[in-house]
Amino acid sequence: MFKDIMYIVIFFFCILGVVQAVKAVAKWLLLPHRGYGKITLIPFDASTKDAEFILRYEKLFCECKREDIYVLDRGMDDETKQICSHLEEQGVITGVIPKSGCALDALLCGRNNEIKGTGN
Image (cartoon, rainbow, N blue to C red; front, side, top):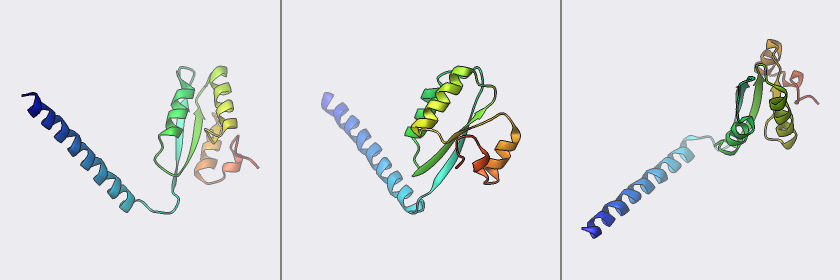
């Protein structure tokens, strides 16, 4: 009886391994081989908890080769602003977009030198 249960468990893990291998091959075949990236906008307000964890998690588990993470300021408190500026210095996030809508328009139109943290 125990032997049968062990065979079932081993079979289950073998099936999971095959599924993961097929997913990896399909992803490799379907994604472009040149560098691709994405832009992530994460809105933070005064009630946002664990801002640093959220941003580091997003950066760590990104599956693309290049990711730009922008924090959208929707009324952040001072502590969250300090965390974001510290993470910007470390290179975890690309910048903080202030409350004004013109900065978001500038980002979407490709004029990202007008956004705090990305000017030259």
